[in-house]
Image (tube, rainbow, N blue to C red):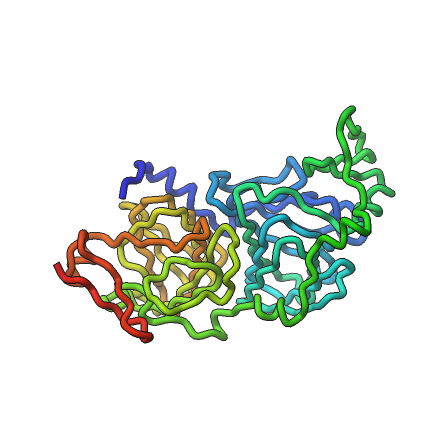
Length: 373
């Protein structure tokens, strides 16, 4: 598979470490309201849905989805809002209370580290920190341009009382700081009852079915051809969408299209993925342990909360290192099932040739049949 050449310094920019994340405390209109200040928003890959031109974006390159992050002081609330595309949260630190519905009373659930929740597009949702101030969540938004946030009416109405408005293109206008509403600029108004009724209502049971935790779930130990080789042992978790599995007779925990898929592997030190490439952008997020990612000839060691963007067609190897097992989350652009292109060395170790390799599921036990050359 062809890939453009990347200089070592270019690859280094794609390794976005926790220390590289840059918070913006005025990314959204609700942070301007009394009692709701202190929220820190991070744009790691893609500009997301920020409403501030002061938001730092670590990597703007389109991936088909956006990766961001958020932290909140204890007791503070990220106000009720809705997105045009799917939004997925991965809790890394702290406990978080999620609630949803037009008025925030359709349901609620407290999530803890390792929990993943996928909230449907068009569902009003909010969350608040409970417990320690040591907290962080990753967020994934579908599409390169996920559109703008739709805020609940109370946010729009309270902001207007303080002279703060949102333009229809999703940018903040704070007249209390001397900013003016330019001629021809329309600002967002509260939703009418008719408009509000077009938004989703999600039951507690429906939302519960959209929660996943790797540590509480069984993975697949024979999901990829390299699982049978030294250094390739791992458990694979299909969380959202088709993902990159090579086995049959298996469904992801969450099936509806998100414009990206999300999976995870767990592996003991010395194991992971052997050399391969793929035809979609891939983003890695470290959940637990330490990992070594080799892109081409360059290797990078990453730790909890670090993020790596691997370009289309780039040869990569991924290995858990250190002295404890790890969890590595993997997001892939697009809704389609991702095809892995194994290196010649891997295929030779499997006893097959590149032009005849075809993973064939056997019955229902997800083992491999390799078509020999």
